[in-house]
Length: 512
RNA sequence: GCUGCUAUAGUGUAGUCCGGCCAAUCAUGCCGGCCUUUCACGCCGGCGACUGGGGUUCGAAUCCCCAUAGCAGCACCA
Image 1: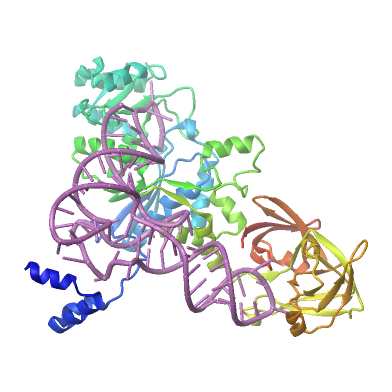
Image 2: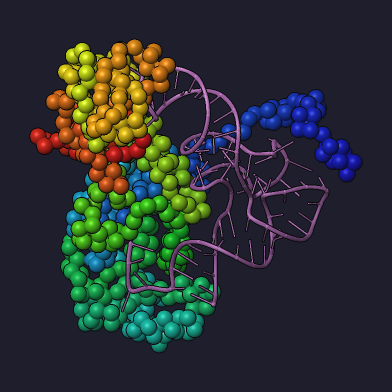
């Protein structure tokens, strides 16, 4: 045996394949098949008959890239296996509910194109939660605790029960009704789930299920006893028939806690998957930090292009498909990752490049008079790969605006793209520009930079907003017809034309 | 402090479950070239990784242990 192994080890892969082919051709088939990269999410267990999944955002602000990962991943599995996709608005903490966010979340979901089949508001379901709370108490799975949080935490860390834990079912039931009746003040009583005080993970010990909150009103309902997420989520996941839950690993402990509730009720829990933490270079994702920045005037609003919100990306011309592609590429790995804009841009470029019309944008323009140049019209293609889309007409009448940056490089000759060549002479003061023929071949042999330009008097002032700040310039008048569309400013990059009025054009830079 | 998860090129990702097709996939990025009246697109070529150390084994990216690092949780937030 050893001998054979040694012999095989000594062979090269090619020799092995040859041998195998001779001995067992049917096995060799497997070998010759090249390994293929799976561009698909890993399969989900117990999903063959269809799935019910959910996207459960907290309505505290608009959706951002972090939400998009959860939303798109779940969406992709629902599309793959068939089933229902429930949007569950988790508005059980009035402190973290922005009434305006309900609408923003819906808009963002529509933009992303999620295949949502049902919408559920947790604030509509408080009576249900109360009902199951009573049931849980009766099953001996919960008790009303009146210890203050400091004291409870100390006991928990010491693996010791608090006095309330030994209360009878009747007492707890009664106390819970008192909570609902408003007999307790804010923070004076809590319904806790009875777990295992000896559990090695302190996060698992007797976690809270309901709290009293009176200082902050809920925008949609009248309530002072609020379910905490582990309770409402467990009850809803069961009642809504959720089969699979894909969420971030920050919920791993919650999954453990929710299992206790499933256990008490004898329910079968869904299949859980927890993906790793995602950091995003260069942007704040925290809703509260963004909100603070907006309030402080640091950001213009939720769609400020320096933010990681979906609406900010939309404004820059990032397509929902690109976001989907980027997020699916990342997948559901448990590794912590840092999201790279480059990867998103590459996806977006692939989508946008075939569509985007090309135009000239001249940043920081300098007006030049070209001596001896014929007045003529340039016909520049709207898209070099699609001549059938036609051209833009640029009427040159002696003067043009060109990027200052190009002249400062002191080229001896430049070609105004799609027009003609211009020789530049430098002396005191402004350089002189002289017509130098129309030959493209000559421009090439003389290595003339081919630059973008715009006819003086036939252009529109424009501002290109980039994450590094606004870039003023001018662009072709025809760009005013591209409002809302993504164009490519030649030699600059892709940008979305946001607005245009008599004062000019406002565009947002997407990427190169 | 306690508990848990993760660790492949600059970034993302495949392979890890069931050790040998892996001197490790694909994409992006970067570099070089070609194409091109854009520094875009396309094409060609190149760069670049199994966290470290032990162990098991004929053989380890893959299994085990330890270490290290990162992350998460231990809220009357989600």
